[in-house]
Length: 222
Image 1 (cartoon, rainbow, N blue to C red):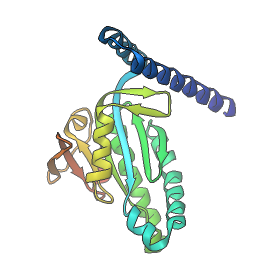
Image 2 (cartoon, rainbow, N blue to C red; image 1 turned 90 degrees about the horizontal axis):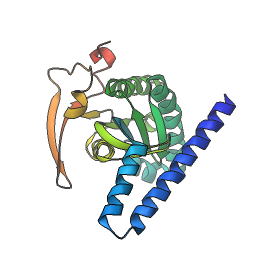
Image 3 (cartoon, one colour; image 1 turned 90 degrees about the vertical axis):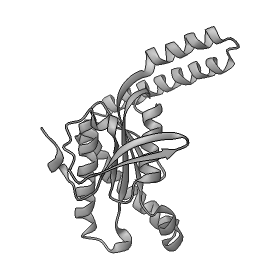
Image 4 (cartoon, rainbow, N blue to C red; image 1 turned 180 degrees about the vertical axis):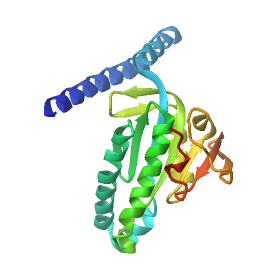
């Protein structure tokens, strides 16, 4: 297993280096024709489609201020230990964690939604055994579309930006916000009372559905 992990890490490193070199060349290219050729190469090499999953821990600022940053760093560590195996169990790739955010890629939207439901159920269970100041809540944004996937470490594209807006800016604790275009690609049975929303952020209109923590994986169709 260690050998497989090392090979995967090396492969991701090579992909990252190749991507950076292409973007550096693009930046230095003076003419539009050359830039167009490089962009085509970037998409041919790294382009794919799939679901983007971005989570954010609720109450980061207020908890850090009241209980101290070390307390919250401990909470972040605990959250990552919970997130990673659930993402993997649902056929996703946890690309990276940055502060209290986790970024994952899923080929299938239904797996991304199932992961969020599983996470919320597991956090609800775990929170019952801890004091209130130890409770962990996640807000999740999910989108689907064309993107650049750089090895197992990074992704870029419109669905990444949209999932980030949903998970970090709009979702409340314990909520999952899924774009309409992602739901169209899934087998998730949305509750008839689910809130359908439209938000405009940075001059971008986002249509999405709000899935509360109370709607578990019973909404999934095998």
